[in-house]
Image 1 (cartoon, rainbow, N blue to C red):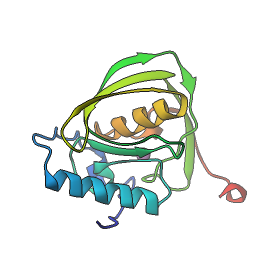
Image 2: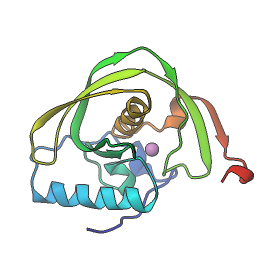
Image 3: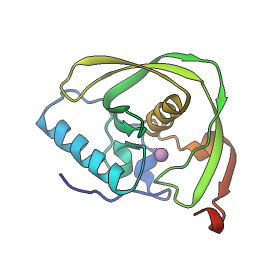
Image 4: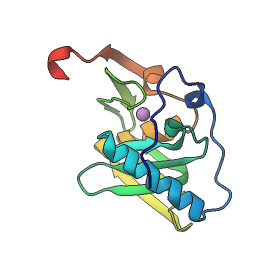
Length: 156
Ligand code: NI
């Protein structure tokens, strides 16, 4: 496994609509390993493949309270309710924002072994899922935020 360079805002790779993974194989699992390692090294709670320059529909998540997952070709099958999130992004360092997100979501995806899984999430985990899956369509949270501001120095 290896820590990969996290791409930031000006990198056009973040704006590409990512391609579906056709086959889940060893290469996929290696990439997922690198994504977890990179996410942990940067203290993130989620990372999408385009953030390390790979235009594939893969995200990894660890909300630090017991929900760790790799999702391949994730798709929303339910979005319900509403919440105002607090978000940041490894690709937009030094900024934070608020987005209107669904309170509850259901996502279907393949796991790292190619098995179909369903994830039901509420609250913060639902926010992470929305944020990461947006990355796969070239969307950054600043595009959909109603607050987007630099983090004050005293809070860094
Ligand atoms: Ni992000």
